[in-house]
Image (tube, rainbow, N blue to C red; front, side, top):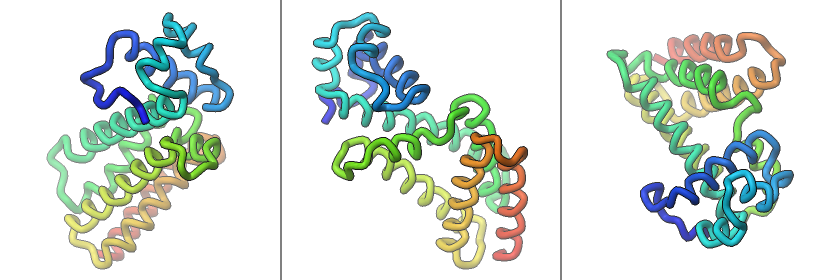
Length: 194
């Protein structure tokens, strides 16, 4: 587990390590990036990296946790930031996703990518991945419940699948307009469940 417990406790060197690691892990894959290259690009020694994070596994978990925090902040800003009726808020998840893909997610979902690289269920990164997906499903349930639709758990699950599928289709360039298409299907689903 990471020795660094909160973003407020990051030293400037630890911040550089985490920023560099996040860029490299997302761009190249977790296993393709070694601590030597992270330390070199961050301008620190391996000793500093290990002193700040304890292990590469802890650094991976911290990278994923921080990325999840940024995603949650982005989603809340888009969904809760304006004067939108509760009935429309679940659809704003698709707007948040489309914006995120354009700016933060050109290689697909960082959590799905990391999950493919971390087969050990006990890896601390797997806990961060599960927390991210659990949060997203729970947030959707809250939005759907507030929208007043019938069977909110089932509808939220369907929206979750639409969002995850749209992420894959959009980032692989399989289906142009995948997020917009998923949003259209989500609108129909919400209208039929209202």
